[in-house]
Length: 304
Image (cartoon, rainbow, N blue to C red; front, top):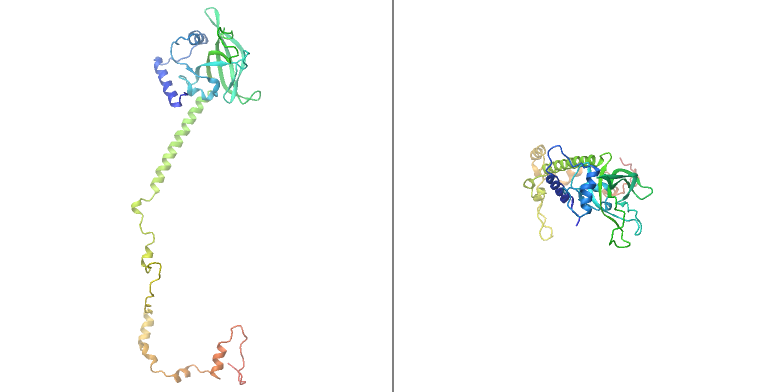
């Protein structure tokens, strides 16, 4: 089971608390101390002086993913990891890891203890991509192995890919970019969190409360006549026309509707004299407006 990031953070805090170091002291062992007191103890199955080094198959991860899996450290991290062979019958280790590979740089350095060579220190650089066109990164690893780790152990199965059960690795970033990236990431997350809270607060202020929303979206429709069962209601009697105040007074002075009672048909014809035959006069009114105007009547008299 692979531990989650939260579990790793909890384990790291526990490891720091178990050290119980006084202020100003840090876990920063020398090469000799790492090999003699930690690597030799782990290879022999004994407990280390303090449980501060995590056991991780680091060749399955990219180096920038490893600090979260360490038990201690902010600028350098320590791991116990196994090593596999590149070929079943060879002695070269498989350096492929994550999305790239580790490449050895410089010469191996012996680690002395008690007047004899106890271990070998190798420096490696991580390249992102596939060899030989990988891109060099700033991630450095110091690998410590026992001096007799290359010899074949009794009882080892023939053709096995396991080269070493355990080697000790110290990982760090040459430009300390990981710590800077973590700090920048925390700042970005903080800004995004504050922006999200501010946006949600402003959005809640601009919303109209439900208590202020009118249930009747179209109050004007209440004044319209009602319709029942999809059929129009009977036509209501037309309301009497309402005249302006001045016109109504003049109409009253004329006597209202009674002023037409004293006028006969001859008086009306005298008001509108119509020369010529009445039938021809009314017929001319029915002529299409597109026809040319009639300038002379049938009896030869001009029309004015």
